[in-house]
Image (cartoon, rainbow, N blue to C red):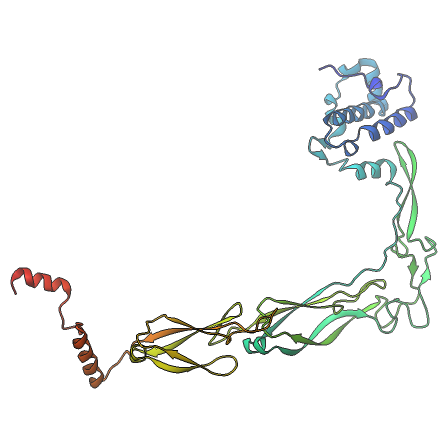
Amino acid sequence: MSKRDYYEVLGLDRGASVEEIKKAYRRLARQYHPDFNKDDTETEKKFTEVKEAYDILSNPQKRDQYDRFGHQAGFNGGSGGFDGFSSGGFSGGFGGIDDIFEQFFGGMGGRRRRPGPEQGNHLRYDLEITLEEAYTGGDKNIKIPRTETCSECKGTRAKAGTSPETCSACGGTGQQQVTRNTPFGRFMSSQPCVACRGEGKVVKEPCPTCSGQGRVVRERKLDIKIPPGIDDGHKLRVSGEGEAGLRGGPPGDLYIVIRIKPHKQFKRKGSDLLMDIPISISQAALGIEIEVPTLDEAASLRVPEGTQHGTTFRLRGHGMPHLQRSGKGDLRVTVRVVVPKKLNQKQKELLAELAEISGEEVGLEHKGFLNKVKDAISGA
């Protein structure tokens, strides 16, 4: 595909001055810049063509070669003039519309407001409690280190009896005007004042208590109310107990993260409590009424005769308090039948008698099923 004449691309005569070339490029760059023409591939191509023409004609040596030999002079097909451009956007020399105006015009006018009040940082505190404390709720006392507004200077950063003064470098605006020379001429822009760091005020005599920072680190004692039924990982928000704000801004918040210690007897599942309780073979077979511990007062559990190992019973209302509503969860008791490891002679005789009555074969001296089959085959 043949390339258009660079002067034609910029809409200029061959005798155009340097200023005319810059003016034409500035106008066309704004017109065809992809940031102003989203999803329009044609304008991207035109922008690349305009940039290529400007790169050649704004350079006296390249322009002289182009005037003498045209495109035959060889300028890398135009790609060398705009290395940062790709179909996916802008990188390198031009990252976007802000970058191009920053490079050409020193920003879009540079009207930046000086920093205003800023909220302080939020804080997190992990509070470990027992399952019993989660059950009953109550108050807990904690200590946290945090930054607070200096009581001496009230956050002004200035020594008592003095106050911050208006910055003479920027007149209190927090901004300074900067002049930049660009390919399109001289442009004015604003940037944060280096003397006052954009605040518009300077402290001549810093507060000795906070060293002119306006904040100090102190240990804060707080009483935290734990609601009954709180669960592991639950967060309590304490408004305004985070770090102090900047420039008169509000403080952050404190987030208490609850961690519940493992319990020796109970496990928790939501508002329900789970526990295992051991009983003997005789108790499982004949039934029994036993006393079960809870986090409040002991409860009575009736285990009916013939209860099997692993059976779970539910004691309603003996679990954890519901956090968002009234009432409590349940206590689930799972029976574990314990087989004795050692028996005296009397116990063995009684169990053997029970097995005989039940028609069961017990004892190591009894033959197994396979031995009985072998005996039947051999006629024993």
